[in-house]
Length: 480
Ligand code: NAD
Image (cartoon, rainbow, N blue to C red; front, side):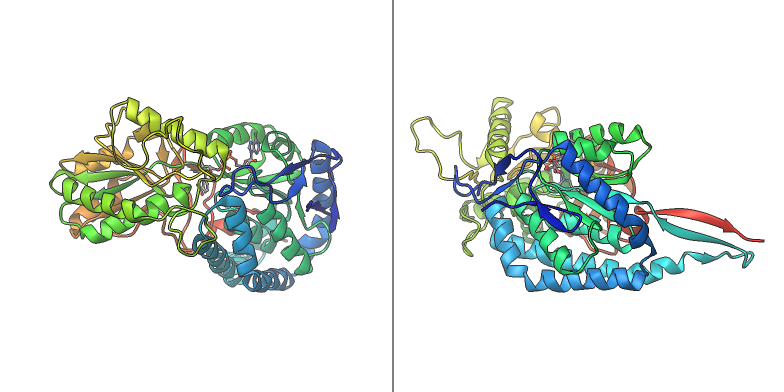
């Protein structure tokens, strides 16, 4: 089966004539379908279509735009099972995690739909004179670039606010997960969007992502992905002063104090450490333990890891699926080898598979925990993006916060404690966009801003009202 690009309301092949395959990471060497290897010219066509559709879409009443998005959300709800299966097949995450991803997109999309009219109430007659007001204007064509780890939810979190506020969209799904992206295009087509309002082009980020970012008609880029690519995009976008919303990497710390409920804290480490095989920007990757409870915590954590079933995500019995593909498998295994060489102690996980052992059928890595990690080790500093936890110990809350902040990233964080004072000290001291108390690092709600500080993000956060604000300009109007 070969899927096409979606441009100007039509399904069309790339001008390159070339396609690329989509592997199921639970079955090495498999091919689920073929997708267009798009070129710079295909991106230009898509931006042409979006630019031509913009003048009419921006004048479409907000109630009508809202109606299209509501129809899309109904179609998304009806496709929950079919789409979850696609996400699991191409990403590897368990079917329960894929359903949770669809549900999260539905909750967030409904939130944006519900707040759109209240958002425009902020745009109207000024406070001092009825002859002045501020009005929101859509920015124009928005480029949306998404990662493979939440292939449909991240796309919705960006695309729906862009459409609701009157922008037209060119969307580039991640190369590992094009199917979920194209499926979203089919739903938006069925939702009756006028041709050109939403366009989807598949292919390599380095060529078509770059073409999208540098096209002067694209006035906003909302990107989620690695910090390295985010920095390149920021630089390229500066050429045309294109605004950016960058949601990037993390190295999120979970702090466990001696007064914490240990069962809950272990649960948080398992949930946020190993859901989506640890390929989660807000996953827990460092666990900082108050020395008096370090040993009992580790014993419980290791016992839970050993019980986890790792396998094909389509089985309802699977606790953790494979990592998303060969590159992720290679990188995570290299990080594990490096941690061992640096002197960290593996207390859960697979030692390096021996050459003589049979090749696993898919890209499976067991939940892995390293104790005796020190802040100078790469495993403490670098985002691994796999099911690997690094454990450090500390003696005071101030030391824990300092360790937590010893990172170039600042996305999410959590503390488990029963002390209000300790929680307060942590909330004020931690350098992160998300601070959780007795809640795991991956938790979020649509009414709250979602974004990181330091090298975890730049620009307005997604969700909350800022998710809409990113896609509008403010015009100050004076009338005599
Ligand atoms: P990535 O940076 O490799 O790719 C992200 C997207 O950018 C893909 O669609 C890719 O094709 C495209 N791309 C690649 N090179 C490009 C270029 N030069 N110009 C334009 N686009 C380009 O990231 P990934 O491996 O897909 O995703 C994993 C990363 O995403 C992790 O670092 C993770 O922490 C981060 N992430 C962050 C959040 C968040 O909200 N902060 C959420 C999910 C994932």
